Image (cartoon, rainbow, N blue to C red; front, side):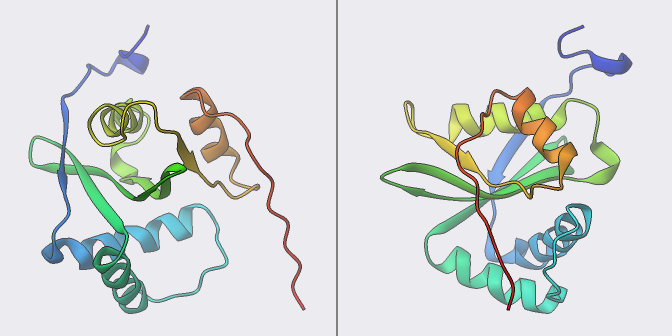
Length: 150
């Protein structure tokens, strides 16, 4: 079966670095990501937009993945001496289960992540779909974060 899962032909995924004009779109996609992973983050799209603007003005970069002119995913990441930390990755809901997320991560690793660098992503423990996705791409458990609320 390979990349032709469930009868879908392999589509060519490309990427471009996000610009200031993409910040609102990134914030809206971030809100969808928060909803899908059932995060406790209650920030509004406007608040997420301000946060995204701050991140992109400092150490983070974002890439938008496209098939033709259609947006299919985005990634927000930062590089450090320890490797690349993938803070956010989101596949647009209507483009899931077609192998596009896999292609996007493969493209990110081939074109953005320096050769030999590690790529780390955090996944909420209750997000079993996300955990399965990352493990299917070869990611392995690295750390466990524990939290208590007062």
